[in-house]
Length: 73
Image (cartoon, rainbow, N blue to C red; front, side):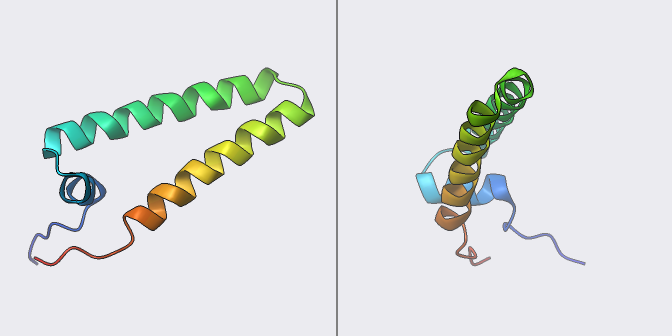
């Protein structure tokens, strides 16, 4: 087995030119934002819940597409 640099934090650091530490802080911030969105969706009316879930999925899809390319070792 051999380690690689194909983890999400490594991809973020390479893609956006920051350090791996900063990339992990960004991931923690995204996690906090998604947790907050989940709490809001739990108490929101149905249309609000659909909007929150739609925006969250759009953010995830955008992040996925930006980081899809595999980074060479």
